[in-house]
Image (tube, rainbow, N blue to C red; front, side, top):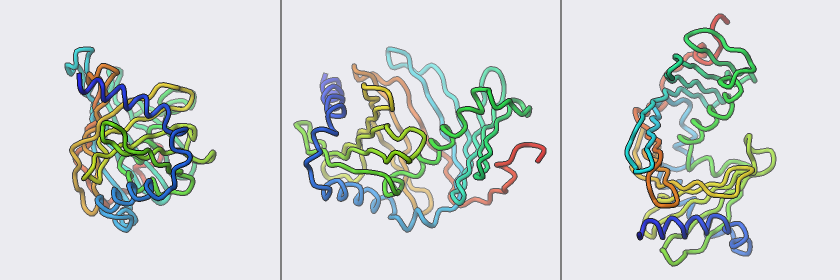
Length: 255
């Protein structure tokens, strides 16, 4: 019951956070984000990262919280210019999705180049942006156009940061994010978000913070429902920092 009460309370806070924190000075939000960045290696550590390679495994759960399916995705990425490649297996075959950093996006299924109208191609920018953002937190919170607002500590004991974006930031600038911190820890333990066009928050718990080279990343993101039951997890593993990645990884086959 305690987890359910906490979930409901935090969901309510997420829905009201933007209105609740408009009058708060920026200092507390900056402090929380800066403490997180410092604990994760600092901005200089992120600036030293030129390329990454890692695995993100999605685990789905049924309504009782029992795992029913696992699917790994294999990620390669470069920062300058931003490029990413993702490989995954589905029942219909092996997918590759990639962007070359010069405006070209593409996808293949079992080695065959797919039409621009297919879902796999249309979602390339979204999924490649996600996988680079996941490994780039908290450092990406200091990018231009990212707005921070403080969420005061509530009765549960969580202090937080509400994050919104400028209109030219990302594919969905109206997404809203809410990072909640326990006293004494620089890392968020709860992260909720409200996607553009939606009103209800998606709730996650963050745990298993790990180091890879100079940076620290979150190893486990657990999605749970309004009852507090786990419905999905994202597990990040096998992280390599600054591996040698040939440009050919990000260009369509045959070019």
